[in-house]
Length: 243
Ligand code: NAP
Image (cartoon, rainbow, N blue to C red; front, side, top):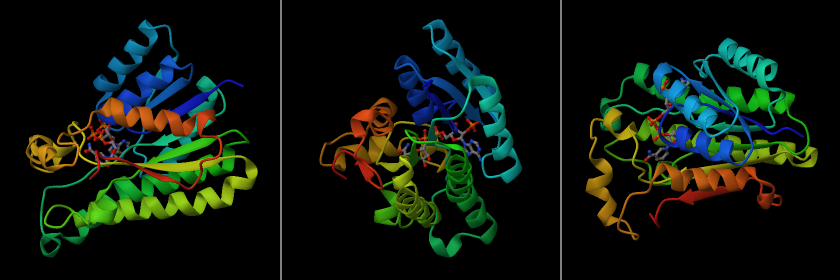
């Protein structure tokens, strides 16, 4: 069966590393992006130059109508979606909970939790046996991210619960659902939080004494999607250097 993977937010960071890795392993890859068409197009070009199959599709995956269209268009262009990586996520400026307004809270929940729900639901309706889903959580869900982004931590807590519940619902249908929980990874997301050098500052305090790379997270995602993880479902795998 042709392996078709949809990667939300696949144009940069962890999503882009995952797209390149999965394409090298024979998946046809749909790279979803929200704003940065140029980054997504670069990933597609790199995959095609290496002999792989990829396309980029714009959609805000916190919007129900756009998610349904994204799945429809991926199916039309590449074939049925057999694998899904719910990677899209976002955070806001470091702040105490007392200073977080409702508009921001709802925006962060939509980017991280609603998007995961909508794409999981679409996959659950469409996937058949052999399918697999990996959701991007964060160790923030366990740590709470005090004085930084408790809203983001709460949204990732919701991702963990969605993962556990859907895994149990779909296990008998032969569809596996897992999550990867990164720690401090070198990507642009920290600049969005207002501290581009956050990984350099905190990396040395970790048991492994360094931040991680997007490629190290992509390796874990690829393993969970693969048949090598055939007896693994409902698992939340930390990729966090011992954090
Ligand atoms: P990143 O470099 O900031 O990339 C985020 C991606 O998500 C971008 O491609 C962005 O698209 C996309 N995106 C955001 N909102 C979207 C929406 N509504 N619809 C569609 N796409 C959307 O972040 P990253 O570090 O690679 O993060 C990837 C995932 O890992 C996220 O879920 C994040 O929470 C999680 N994570 C990261 C770390 C870390 O240290 N980096 C740690 C724990 C968890 P555009 O480029 O088009 O804007």
